[in-house]
Length: 293
Image 1 (cartoon, rainbow, N blue to C red):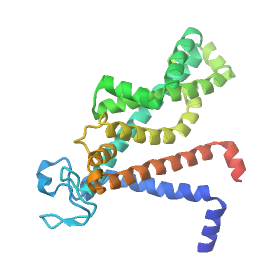
Image 2: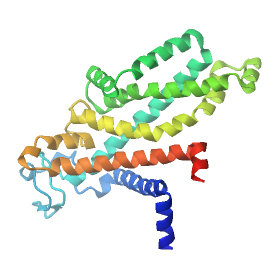
Image 3: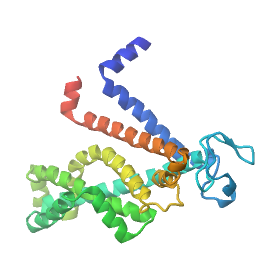
Image 4: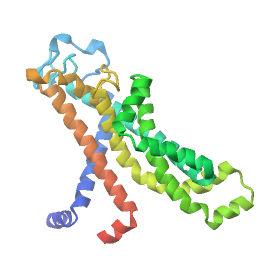
C-alpha cells in the first residue's frame, strides 16, 4: 500500500504537493486559533516579558524554569509565542482584507457590465489606472496616507486588491448580460439591485473564488512587507512581518534567530497558501481536470 501511495505521488506530484500544503495550512490555522492556549508567553502582556532575558539564544533557560526553544527577541519576548500570535494577526489581516476586496471588486465589476456606457467607462478607467501601477507603490501610497495600524493596513490591502476582482468579474458578467434569463428579469421589471445581486453576481463569482487563495497569499506577503518597512502593523504588535523586522537590526551582531524563525514561518505560510490556491484553480478549471484524467 505504501508503494502504491508513492507511485501515485510521483505520477501526479502536484496532487501530493497540494495535499501536503493543505495539511500545513490547516496546521497554521489551528496554531493561530490555539495561540492563547498553547503559547508559552503572551507577548502583549508586559508582566510576562523580562527585559534582562532579551536576545537570548535558542535553548536558553528562563528564570522561571522555562526553556526558550527558539530564543527571545530584542524585547525579551519568546520567539515561539511571537510566531503563534503573529500568525493570528497576519491571517486576520489577510483573510479580512481579501474577503472585503473580493466583495467590493466583484460588485463593482458586475455593476460596470450591467449599466455599461459611461458607468462602465469611468469604473474601468479607474481599474486600468490602478492595475497599471506597481502593487507595492499603491500600498505604500495608501498606508502613508492612512497611517499605520491594523485597520489601516487592511484598508490599504483592500485598495490594492479590489481592481483585480473587478476586471475579472466584469468580463464574466458581460457574457451573462445577453442571456434569456436576464431579458426575462427586465421584462418582469425586477429591481436593479435584485437583478445584479440575485442573478448576475452568483453566476460571475466563480472566477473570484479561484482567485481568492492566490490573493490571500499576496495579502500575507504585502502585510509582511509593509510591516517590515515599519509602515504596517505597529512594531509592538507581533505580526510575522513586524517580528522579522524586529530582528533585522540584530543580524549583524549574530543574533540570527530573531528574524530567521519568524521568516521561515512566514515563508511556509505563503508557500502553503499558494500551493492550495493553485490546486483550487486546477480543480475549478475544466481543461486542467480533463488533462489530469
